[in-house]
Length: 609
Figure 1 (cartoon, rainbow, N blue to C red):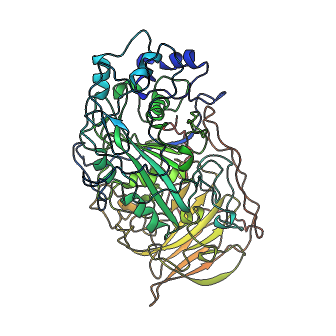
Figure 2 (figure 1 turned 135 degrees about the vertical axis):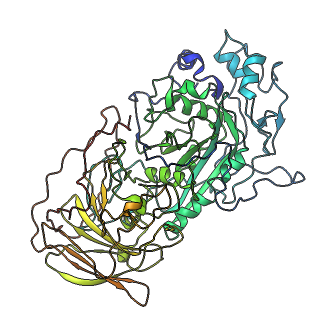
Figure 3 (figure 1 turned 60 degrees about the vertical axis):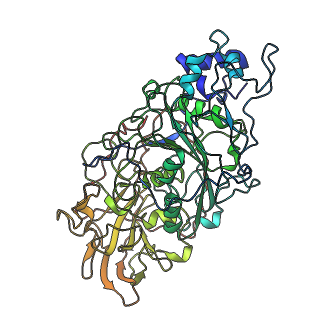
């Protein structure tokens, strides 16, 4: 039997063995799955110097009404959620009929959808299944009472404001949406990198993307707010961010299951720390947590209809984010757990605590972006190395004021059309171009100069906008992209027009101030010392575009050798991916930076399990 109650999966470290004995196979585990089965990102970002109480409630955007007046008729289930029914068919002749109340159970009530909830709003395990799975430990007041304790009464689950189409399963973007041509750099066939294409297994990045959002708390950390309040910390702001950053190409829709899912053990019993793995053969960690979550919702959720899964933990579980960032995403490859719907659990983000700043919701945008295939741009080993990108991209800093994504990332995600990206691959050419700022829809957004098959110089215009509120020196941003540098080791480096200046945005501890004045202003030039590559900022035109002259290297050379990227041997990857057809040969030349930034340091990613 594959579906089991959330409350007893990992009880006393013996649940897996109990279920195996009853069902004949390990429940929810894909046969032959290795110990760790998901590419994942563990956040090791620099901690801000300010704190935020776990009791505080942060509102991201406008809170949409979720419940209807009590006089409303019962609402239908949102498409994508299965009809109610918590108990699987009874096959044990000694079992009581489904729905028979247990004497120790607290009184149950029924929501508008027919799903039973405890008086506290926490879904208790089925007494029938507790008896079947723990025959020597029948449920009693102490066990059921502890599992149902905490939380506050929750209203009936209401339909999403963006109803799902039940006949639509997740799909990958079509080839026409993906980067192509000599500037579409290749890279490893697995994992999150700066390669222009993303391997199979990750979420679609354009069109309608559907996320399932769940809420968990623990016996020693019961939720102090309603799931509606926790949900409002991230929505609709998370969806609005993606809509604006993608220029309307990504329609992100979240379906929340608005009740707290009480885990069976205290938070500390799961051993969740920075770097915790997803080991399906372990009774701890994210695999144990995910088993309980699946057991609690698999009967009512059709996982085939969702691209992403968000798990929002009660903020008072674990350390505050200002002390240790636990939020993590398991993306790409399967985690090793299979849902009742026949699809594996993958592309799942766990959000812990609360970040501070005026747009703290962006931690979810950052984590979801890993499921889209984007890498971490910061150094993940806490070595103290200076940030390579700073506040110019969400994948380096998601603390503090809002910041947009680099143009290269927007191209990789399919948010820029071919006519918005100009590939300067012919050697020895010099021409003037006009760039529309990243914050403004339309126009040419990105100039790219391939240096070899793994590296390119990217050029874009940045100025203050709705998602770039920290910009204090507008101009032309120049950066190098390297697809052979792994995530968390500085795969992208911004060229600083004013190195060692201290920056121009120095009042916010959540912003890396040194790179805030990195853009090149009118009259300033970036020059590659090892070649004649030059980028000259000519100023802002009357129509709002930024004029820039680019002189490409005159003599291409052989591509640099492609080193084997660092990977964890215990972490399998999906090696299949789509390679867009190139439209011509790549121009190649070595690049030596002007000394504004240190060379990328290939350190061991001890942040990654």
